[in-house]
Length: 269
Image (cartoon, helix red, strand yellow):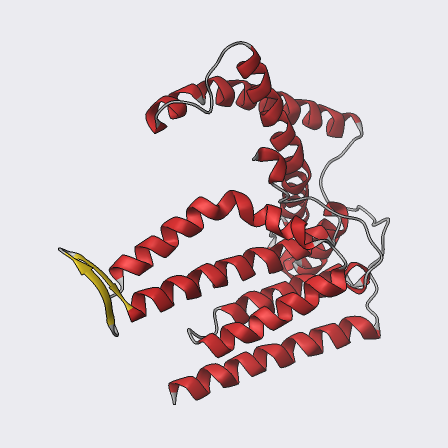
């Protein structure tokens, strides 16, 4: 299961999505998230789904990679669907047993929320899949640069985001190694009741925390040895330059967003 987690990973490529300016990709992702939460109708969600399918196709990243990012969240999706299924009471009654009722509104909301979360995960993952952590850090710092006038630590925030994204795959790999080592010593990590498995996870979490703190200390020492003292006076190795294709991608995203707004408004009227 841990090997299936692809959050924070970068897949090098030469697709149209890969070549976009990372600043525009961040803005496009924010507009995309707004698009998904524009309305509660099927038509507005269909616009977001169409945008997602087109973006995934243009990125040339295998769909199985996006499926892997969704797989660890299946329990969460199931809980979300069940809660909406039984708590929403509207429309035609499909099933009733004592206090349990399944209605048309509950089914519609459950399916709608699950699809929305899947699209949200897929679209958000596309940003990290097609953008390296270093480039993403530079783009974030450039977008937040106006906050420097308010003495906001923009560079430090961008650096923390970069380090966090960089070490997600490392921590996942470290966790998998610890679990394998504990199993080799006879620990039962995946068996027993939920309470038993939760208690057995202590044997995984303690070494993981120790390893994480050790890595953080080594990273801090390495940065100090290289005379790192924050973003003051630093220059950039990579200069970000926008091109017509970036503005075209942004314009297309805005068109999709306006379409979602129009469809949501028509459903309400």
